[in-house]
Image (cartoon, rainbow, N blue to C red; front, top):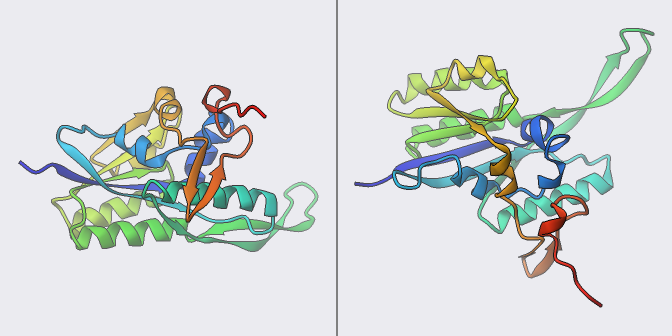
Length: 214
């Protein structure tokens, strides 16, 4: 019998803020394909496509450079990136009422929804896994069931994240454990388009970093 086809849709900012920023900062050089494989049963399921949805912080050149390096590294293992953008938004301080501007990420939720529903209609998967705890994605699950009732949708969340609302709209959910992060890392150095890419400092555990002697 053929295996169940699985697509994985990863909300990059949700993953970063819920796990990688503070809990597992040494795992930021994360191999999303390998992480996805740890979320399925290889005997009955197989990964078709892993998507990474994010946006580049263009106003912060140093951060943007590291992020682009990571995106290029993910491409070497076949992860497909779909990028949104940041917009400038006017805000008011609730205490002093002063006006200020901040950057707000746009299009990630929409990009996930469009890609997920498009893949479903085109029959590119049997099961979709969404790595996000964002409740704004709950309606996508509802619409998916209306359009393609035979498809399954699951939610993947890091341990410690609740994501109560979105889980209620899924067929099942799975929790990413600490070992899943630590065992799903890219090599310190990868080659992309003929160029050597090295993981940014502190993006890997010290035990994963090769020491090069002069």
